[in-house]
Image (tube, rainbow, N blue to C red):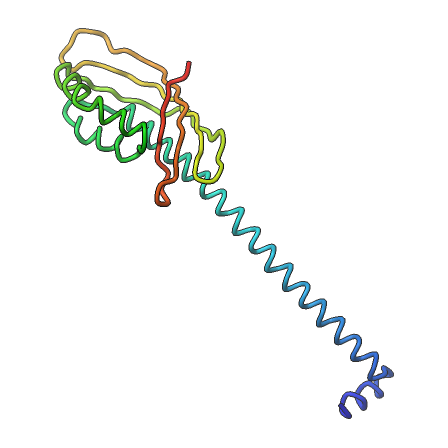
Length: 175
């Protein structure tokens, strides 16, 4: 302490004033460190929310891409992609119609291709989300003289986060 008194006396500051300045600067340092920690936590939380929104929307897009891509030669793989992106009621619905879809697709030599035009997240709360997806679809029948059909599909998709992965739990076509 004698060293501090000698140094402060040389520059014209009392030892008491020096201690006050050091205490104030220390407190300010603690406040700044706390603010930096809080801001960092807020940024991580915001990034996690953005990542979750992106993942939910990507899941809706992937599911829609599976719905618009159907080929009589790859129908089993096509159906597996749809099932891999679904859960709950949507998955049960697809599984229930699986045999009929396979039979009809192969018998009619269906070739369905599509392009996703737009997708947007309507809501996200906890482990559920709602997305809207729009796609143009071209349906043709290989070897048939029937002209191809162009269709516009719009879906409202409910998504559920299952084990850290977003899956479509309900897909409804909207008009």
